[in-house]
Length: 218
Figure 1: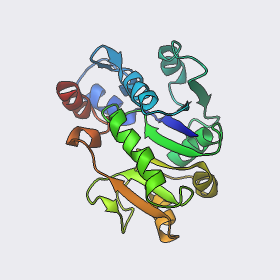
Figure 2: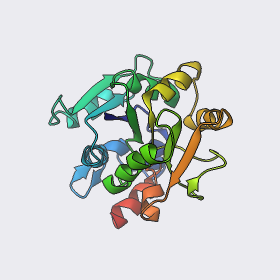
Figure 3: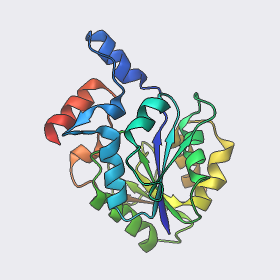
Figure 4: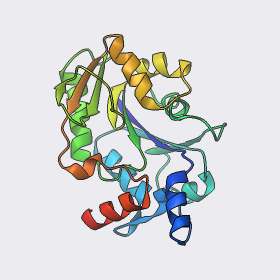
């Protein structure tokens, strides 16, 4: 079984900073419009199209506002969970999600990645089963090199790996994701880099210019 965890618990600090500096209305990046739908809805729809059986969305900061736009999703397909500590680092947010899925492969996606296509997500899932022991491989969106990777430096979401692998590493960390991926690599976990379909898939919406770039290209 393949499940998914979408992390959506961040502070929105960089987007807020940009909007304040421009004298614009403060908005949460995940609720900004992207061709008629909020960013987070675009991300969730791509995840569900990738073939996962269950999707868990982890909320933290601004949970009430984000929760409100997710109400049309069936509980059978999308489960919402909440961080008890709003200041949890990404590792704890991801762990919260993993604890709410069944054991098996897990597609991990940031909610601010609406341009990662479901075709690429499907390829990540496929590569996690084709290129090694599914319990000891991270199939990840490549930033530079593709295929079997010598380093996890600079890598992050989206990726697919077994929930057992995440449960082995995440509890010991209160950190961003990359140091954990590097530790996995140093312990001989296989990393396989899947190429992006286009450069747009490599852009997270962190700042206002990221949003404008994606909005114009989407």
